[in-house]
Amino acid sequence: MTYQSPFGLLLAIGLMFGGLNAAPAVAQNGPLRIEITEGVIEPLPIAVPNFVAENGAAGEYAQNLSRVIAADLAGTGLFREIPSSAFVGRVDSFDAPIAYADWKAINAQALVTGAVSASGDRIVVKFRLFDIFSGQQMGEGLQFAGTAQSWRRMAHKVADAVYSRITGEGGYFDSRVVYVSESGPKNDRAKRLAVMDYDGANVQYLTDSRSIVIAPRFSPSGDRILYTSYISGFPKIYLMDVASVQARALADQPGTMTFAPRFAPDGRTVVFSLEQGGNSDLYRVDVASGASSRLTNAPSIETAPDFSPDGSQIVFESDRSGTQQIYVMSAGGGEPRRISNGAGRYSTPVWSPRGDYIAFTKQNQGRFHIGVMRTDGSEERLLTASFLDEGPTWSPNGRVIMFARETAGAAGQSSLYSVDISGRNLRAVGANGGASDPSWSPLLP
Amino acid sequence: MSYLPKAILLIAVLGLAACNNPDRFGAGGAGGDGMNGAGAGGIDSSGLGDASDPRSVAYFQQTLGDRVFFAVDQNTLSDEARATLTGQAQWLNTNTDYAVIVEGHADEQGTRQYNLALGARRASAAQNFLVSQGVAASRIRTVSYGKERPVEVCSTEDCYSRNRRAVTVLSLGAGS
Image 1 (tube, helix red, strand yellow):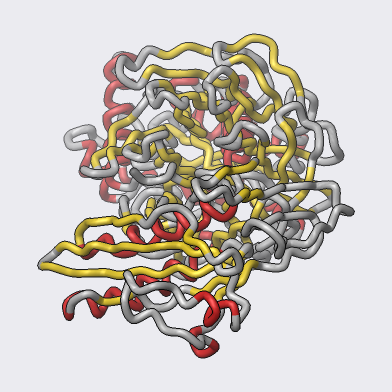
Image 2: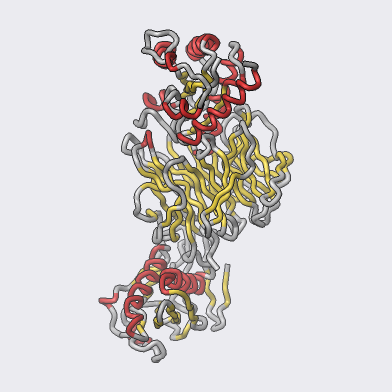
């Protein structure tokens, strides 16, 4: 994918899975550009000096903003932050001319400058991005205004803009993740629904730990959450409004278990599994009317459904062949076609928001993997390997996958990790104890 | 008491038990909550004895065995499982005050949703067998816990084999 900036800089990011075409990661001649290849990537050196505090009250935000922006960018593995101790130049005024030579001297290829002013409960954040070697500003400066407590979101928005201008991809930093917070021993684990920023900050709990909750899923607009709870004593799907934290049962049929819900891209329909008499099949329900219809009718287990981004197809797992495999069918039902064909068992398929890949969990020879494949099952590629990795979820730009990793044994714990879709940059997400079943929101408005 | 009111009372008691103890239908299920909930239902507390008393919950759990085990990914009942469930069915056919919830469980080697579905298959297999042995279907409910509630916490087959289980949990249902 390429992106033509207003300044004529051609930015490109290529996710090539071939492996041999190890082009220089950073092209020095011509436009500022990041290319990702299968080979080692040399992260792009970027300087993010402390933002300028334009008044006294803004002082506390000036450094914090630049730290979060730098952490976002470095966290992608595509950028390397140049420490401020190496700086030759200073940015004391947001509107002063850039001393390109000072930044060139420390090999910075990109520079982010910014300023913040605070007044009461409001702050205003401004930033500009510069291509040091071509000596030009990249794109226009932007300004964000909001409440002081949303300063981290403003930092994420700056980082999203920088990432987007340099890679040509959409950003993903200003987003949230709903997940299951876990505590206590393995045989009596307490579980609570929680949401956090994509980087683990701002944890909020949505349920208490009295009932087991599993597999929360954001709605396409991020305002609602589907999940399965044992609060009635029996597993059922609930729909929670995020703002009010009020929940109601969805698709409730006595004597059945409902689980594994997902929203359709329009947010009006939910596909889910319903178990009756020991057999699980897929159904869909209209959220407003509650009218449901059956999509599969087989004695096998059909579960973990997800929609294609255009809403026309559903990918799911089934053990109709004898082991769990991944199938795709029309969103209205009909004959599914199997797309997973490698050794082992495939489960929890999730369609990339870009539509180009399906991420999955794979079990083979006693190990678990997170992987991606094309939507026809070709080009399968395993990104991780461990005792137990499961439940991938896509970043809003379809370039990063978050999942849960559980360690073995009596003291085993689950925590969240992310990895990019070329298998690089595996890293732990958040640090607040046990966590599982992540679901990434869309980019926040 | 006719069959219908009995069933309604049973549902009412189960409903209360669910409210008071949402996560677990505790072993025995005959705690104070259930009794209070039954109100004037006339529940006979003399049914609770030690494991040597064939009418006791302890006898059901320990002497007859309240659980059966499954092979990896399977919900087929082994001969041993059938023998255990046959004993359970005979006891239930004698002690008609009790209703049961059959819990289905899986080991940790599997994804969460699949294990929920697998636990439901196992619970259903045990339920169907109990019904085939004459226990009224209306006395049995099932619930799957998937891999959420292992009893053994090690990550070896020794523990896994005891986590792949269906547990028949008694609850005092209806007065006779």
